[in-house]
Length: 122
Image 1: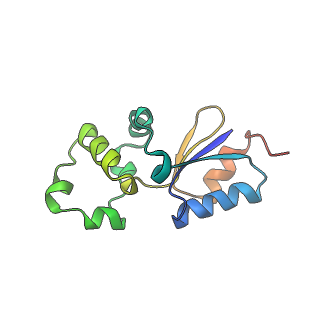
Image 2: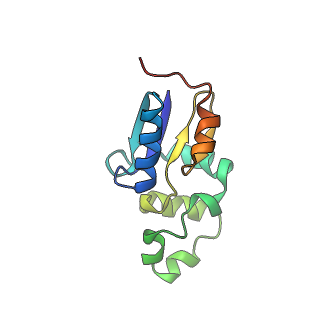
């Protein structure tokens, strides 16, 4: 099963979910807004992507943060605290593929490669 983590109204999440549906993949969706950020997975994501990629410093949520809050993100612990408090600051989508591989964001090429061994619906 492919699991997509993110926010349903995020354009990039919409593109990723549409691509997966168009390619016949069954997907579980974890909504940060309704289900919260899965705290036990944050260390896994930080190890896979690093905080500089996982914390979306180009997004609206980051830009609206006070400068002191931004400046306080100096290590994985402070990044984790921010992501738990402000889930929208996480770059999306985070996708777990069958076999345990993780991807961040949406790229049709990356999804094509990662989805090769993923089971299809039906």
